[in-house]
Length: 135
Ligand code: HEC
Image (cartoon, rainbow, N blue to C red):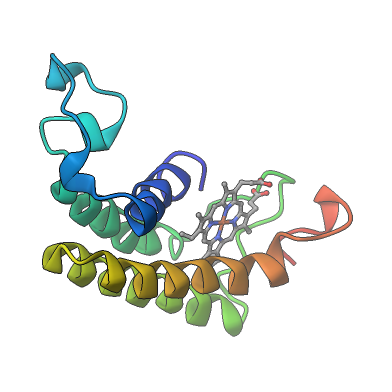
């Protein structure tokens, strides 16, 4: 979540309001901490970040993982795989939008992505206490 989905979704969200082609490359792009400024920057970074999110969906299906409160990731609950599929599909819409280099397409894709994140968060993350997550 924090290491892949958060940074990758921000790259996509950036492209809603600003043209990634205009994002300046770092003087030494191989040291870039911002994907948009890296050797694989601009629209390529939006494509790659979308693919990273689609692949991260696979990680959310692995058995034996735990949430931060120690409970097992609820992969056995009926709606979990549905939310994971929602993430993968939204990420692929975002990938296609990035390939089109069209900011209006990204606007639609980002909307789908936000919905895919919050569908799962509403059920498994937005809880009064940490202990109530992932049930
Ligand atoms: C299939 C379910 C699911 C999907 C889809 C999902 N998340 Fe999460 N996310 C969670 C759960 C569960 C937690 C809490 C994990 C924990 O406490 O260990 C979480 C936590 C997080 C956190 C850490 C914040 C916190 O309060 O702990 C971030 C950031 C995050 N998600 C970002 C995203 C983004 C961005 C997306 C969409 C691109 C996304 N997530 C999609 C289930 C999901």
